Image 1: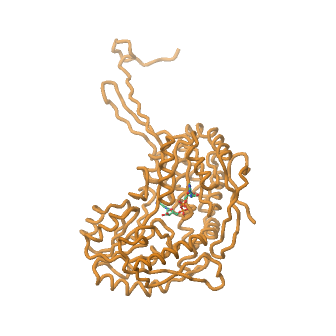
Image 2: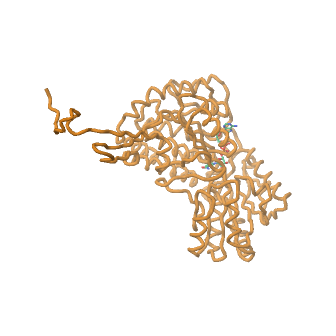
Length: 498
Ligand code: NAD
């Protein structure tokens, strides 16, 4: 049995002695055990980070960027191995796993431009002989607590920006698929980062609480489910930390009567079922506008969904693989039960799905539920599985109000050929990230990622200039250099040596 250890200066240790099983979701077998750390381990990591961070903060930005450049090359060289490892613990197919690494890598590429991004502002002549300049200084030690569903991308969103800005960073990845985060930290050290700048501690609530309570950790970035995000936000802020905490989602895809339905169906099969629906930017709710649109869409969706191939994560033909754990499979199936009891019409039922030869794998078949209404619990809550719900709207205004009033506000998409409708929708919808004929509108690395309402607590997004702002604080200097060196003579004096 492989053991997955902490990566902290001075060796892993594991005083707590607690461990947790890591599964291969395609086979249902335990393939490794991950150590669960405690406060003593975190203290050690923080002490090591404190030793290295001040010098890193004073390292000129071009030298910091050089480490990022070398890291980018190492990630590229290791892409296939990282994707295989990721796929074996998460269950997403290899192409999706490569996408996971690739989207994180793009933030590292952005961080290579940190000398430009972190430049301050300057005003000459704000008053007689007075100039004002502001600089963005790192916070010190930052920590990241990440979810299982993007074990490469989300850690890189966080530490890529934090470290490029001059901070040290402690990563606490999901205990369900921790191997890739460990590998990412190893590669960062290989890229020439000083020891202690980036460390990885594993754990569950005990470790998360230790991070939130540690007086020397200045900022915490969290991504995960909303109740935990809210908890992390409150406890971190109460302890005087800067906190950004991204939560769950229930993204809607609005289908206007004039949309290209073949394109919509193609987009929906990827966006609702890809990665087994375990994406915070998945599209698990489709909102056709008008009954005629609903019927036409459903007629095209059914054969497309029935044609989806569910397979082990290494199957190159599979559209998607298993969900992450047996518990999660049970939870997704319970949500389908609930939807049925609430009066949803189960058009395609993925419960009880079993893959021949892999009967112990955590597979859920693709599921389509029609006649879903806003009072249903299965609509209000996140299911996070390969389940697509149809909520019919009578007109544009009703369709606009559905995502706007939902408790989550991560992403939304509208499919239409009408530019005016799209423009109106983008301006008025109460959601943080909008796609127009784009089903999964995850912003590129030089914009920034963040939802609204219960999808994000705190007010700064991930990566881009928003990420730089989160990981730095502003210092503003107002300086006056009076003419004549201050002796009142008003003479212009150039100081000389000796
Ligand atoms: P999760 O909330 O279970 O876990 C996230 C992190 O919190 C993990 O590191 C975990 O160890 C820790 N944690 C778990 N229970 C805890 C507790 N009681 N106290 C303190 N810490 C705890 O989330 P998950 O299942 O790993 O990930 C899926 C969720 O993440 C979904 O809700 C998804 O929508 C969300 N997500 C959101 C975004 C976004 O940017 N908004 C991105 C990806 C995933």
